[in-house]
Structure formats: structure tokens, C-alpha cells
Length: 604
Image (cartoon, rainbow, N blue to C red; front, side):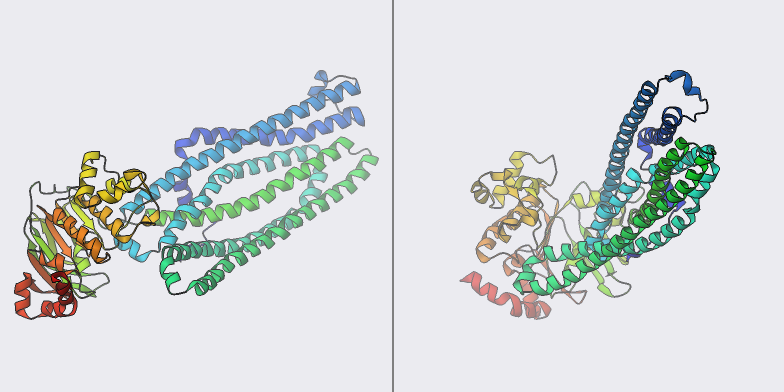
């Protein structure tokens, strides 16, 4: 699984690519970096002001400094002056930290907006075969969880790592300037802090890997079972589904429990080691002050520096985990973005025929996997304006013909031509623009009825929209709705009957005025009453168009100019309804099994 990727702590190739998303916002990043560096300097200034106040006014042991000429000789006035300076440093720190945090958070969101948009755009270009191999839940994880991890890197990772290193450097330089011995005591526990950090990093890295896997499983499971909730309830599978989800959810909880345990011991351990160093400084400083080797102000300043010294180390360990998680997330995201589109437009695409053109399948062979052939040596032609029905048992290859014609897949052998040109010479977008498709399972998007008919096609006028609805017998239903065409449609058309959804699909196909119409068992999921409306709609849809109809209903087949009979991936028979019955072959058997009762009902 892709989520198993742990990732390096730092991968120059991936980081260079990630930084391209920050490049458009480089000015904001540069200003944020300047703010962090100024803040690091201000963190050093505070303890120095404390030292100055103590050594000059509280416990006078003060060596001359350049600030003396600006400070009063009066203790109360001088302490007030230093206090005001300290307050100014605190206010400046507050403003700088707010500005830096706001800039990087907003910049990170804009960069991730660009990345999500790029991923979505790429997902829309990928072939149908890609989605056959990749669960939707895992792809959702790429766009949500993985991008969120990268946002954390941009907003609180890359720049703040630089700031932490700068703060450590400035604090260490200030401490060395004040007292090498106290600096050595403070640094003595650093190896133990480093060892604790390494142990923490290893523990959290494994937990994060398990969390990623669990999140991907949860997304995939929820997507599949919420979509199939009707089947789940129909077969009373709720308890089993709940047990399966509980197991996946528990994996996520346990993985987080381990991470929480690691955080639980790491910060107290670092705090404990920090207090040890403070105790050592207190002991050494006390004796040094008594011997006159050290001032009280220096010791107090070191206590403040001690807190500033260990905080960046804790932050760096956290940033390390963010960096490692981001490297793994970016590897998965870029692997998706680098997935090549197999069904792409040629360098110099042919224009689609301007006039009505014949469709030809010429010795077509196709397999979804290696040489497990689904279609074998299929050859036939459909003349302009002709309506052709395709029948056959389940698995005979009927729908595969349509998928190949729309170029969702490419044939392994032979060719498919429209107007004499191989469809691989057309831009797939231009090719599909001339087809209208009505599927067995009508699919509606969240929005309004008008949105679902138009599907974003601005050239469809309101008059054409109403005309399309009227021709497919949808007008009465729309008039019965409180908001008419503006009536809201929930996800997948929930709340509408199958027949209503199918009529909306018919209106969609008619409104786009396609030159070639494909009906893939479009009437098999509607009742007899609705079929009467659909049948009239079909007559209007196929009028003057080249039409391919995959059907289980005899009424639809009998209207076809020609019938193609598929059997085990081969085209076995072709002819009109009566001609095929007279052959007493495969179609005659299908008629006996599926269509004879339908014909009797139609006659009665």
C-alpha cells in the first residue's frame, strides 16, 4: 500500500519540487523568514536586559556597557527604563510572531489550494483503467490527508526550522559570551536530550505510518459502505459492517495511542533534563557568586536562556516528524501526479468529421488484462442515421464496445474508425463531445435539476432546456416541483425515483444535441409505466441520429434498423428482429428466454 511509505527525513528531489508551490508566494515567505530571524534576536535581548537590571541596580556588580549613557543613575528610574524596554521587546515579539504565523499559514493554504487544484485536474484526465485499479477512498486520502500534511510543512515546518536553528545559535553565542562554564553545564545534558529525541522520533515515525494506513482504510471503507448503504441494509449486514469498521477504527485509535504515549514521555524527559541543567547552574553559580567570579545578573540570565535553549530542541524533534511525514506524503502525491495519461490526444489531432459519418469496428481485439480477451475479432459498421441494437448474455462484451468507442480504453488489435479516421487520431475530449450517453444507472450530481441537465454547458439556452425536458416527458414532473428547474438535487439524486432520474438523464442527452447517441440498457431499471414515457423519449432521442442501443427490452430492440448479437466476446449474428428469429440461432434462444414474455405483454 502507498501509505506504507515511511519516507526519508529529507529528500532533496522532493523538497525542490515542493518548493515550486511556494515560489509564487516567495515574497511572503521571505518576509516571514525575516520576522523569525528578528524574533530570534529579540529572544536573546530579554535575558540581557534582565542581567543589566540586576547587575546595575538590584545587586550592583555592573561592568560598563554602551547603554549606560542612556540609563539613569537612579535605581527606580533605571529599572523603569529597562522595564519599558523589556515591554517593548515583548510587544515587538507578539506582533512579529502574529505576522509570521499569519503569513505562513495563509501562504501554506494558498500553496495547498494550488496543489489540490492540480491533483483534481489530473484526476479528471486519468484513464478509466486507472480507477479500475485504485480505490476511490485512497485517492480521496491523497487530496485530503496527504495535502494537509504538506500544509503543515509549509506553514510551520520549513521556515520555523530555520528560525529554531537561528535561535539556538544566537542563544548559544550569548551564553558563551557571558560564561563558558555555565554554558558547558547547560550543554552537558544535550547528549541525553539528543538520545531521547532519537528514541521519540523512531517511536512516532512508526505510529504515524500506522495512522496513515488506518486513515486510508477508513476513507476507503466509508466510501464503499456509505455508497452501498441500500444493499447493506437490504441484506441486514449492519452488524457485520459495524464490526469490520470497528476493527479498522481500532487500528487508528491504537496507532494514535502509541503516538500519544511517545509525546507523553518525551516532553517530561526533556523538561527533567532541563531542570537538571538548571540545578547544576544554580549550584555552580551560587559558589561562583560567593567567590566573586560571577554576577547575579549573569546567573539569572542563564536561567532564562536555559528555557530558550531547550524549547527549540523540542520543536526541532517535532519538525523532524513533520518533515518525514511530508516527504512520505509528497512521494505519494507526486506519484499520483506523475501517473501518465494513457489515453491522450495525439500531437496533431484530426478534426472530428463535420458531416454525419459511419462508425466502423475493424477486427477489434481487446482485453482488460494481458490476453484474457473480452472482445475477439469484432468487425461491423454503423451507417449515419442508423439505429443499431446490441444484445447478448451478461459478459458478452456489449458495454465494452461502448467503452472502446468512447476511448475509455484503447484496443490491442484492430481499429475503430469514425468517418474513415481512427479514433486514436482524435482528441478524446473532442471525440466524446459528439456523443450523448444514457447509462443503466442514472447518475446525478449535487446541485439543481437545471445544473444536472446542463452540466456546465453554457451554450444550452433556457428555451433549449425546456424543450429537451418537454420532449422526454419530464415537464409535468418539473412543474410539480416547488422550485421547478431550480429544485435542489441531493447526492446521486437521492429522493428521486429511478424513472425520474433516468428522464433527467434523457433530457441531459437531448439538450446537448449529440450527433451519436448511446443507450446502455437505459430502460432496464424503470417500471412499465415509466417505460411508456421513456419509449416516447427514445423515439425523439434517436430521430435523425446515429444510435447504439444496448437493451434488454424487446420494445427498444424492435425499433432498431439492425441487431448485433454478441456471444462470449464475438459477434455471432447480425440482422433485423425477424431475420434473426428465422435463423433460430443465439438470438432466437435469447428471444425465447428473455423477450417472448415481453412481446406477449406488449400485445395485451
